[in-house]
Length: 157
Image (cartoon, rainbow, N blue to C red; front, side, top):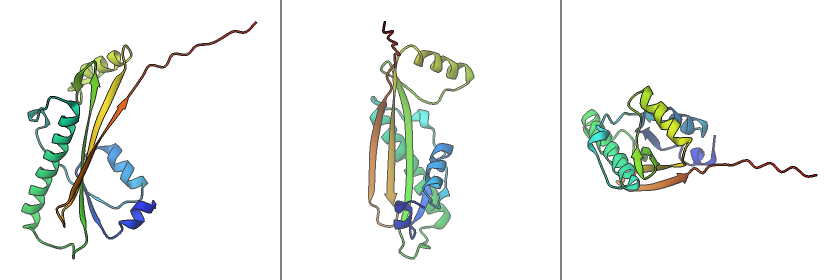
């Protein structure tokens, strides 16, 4: 169990994601958590920049899940004052200035992969954590840029 997991053993964690990678990260860190899906129309949410888009999507997912929780629990306080943390996230790829989300089919996925062999891409991700007990929220954005690696071999005589 990670130090962070030990520090939050009294917190109930809700992961608002169906991402296998996000599930694995929390499990590997030793967290116990519940999974809830937001079931939102991500394509209906558009922003001009990748950074604004991923945060807007994380916020929309959180709002949808908080609505579900209210409906399911009718604001029932079964957490005995312990923190209830909701974690939502999103990620997109930016390729040649264009935001790319999940490919719609295998053909599009293959096209994306082919493109990425021609020019570098970047990923922009967001994470939003809301303490449902206090209402406090904290979010952040991370951008990773991938560059081409060129192998050069020297021959010494």
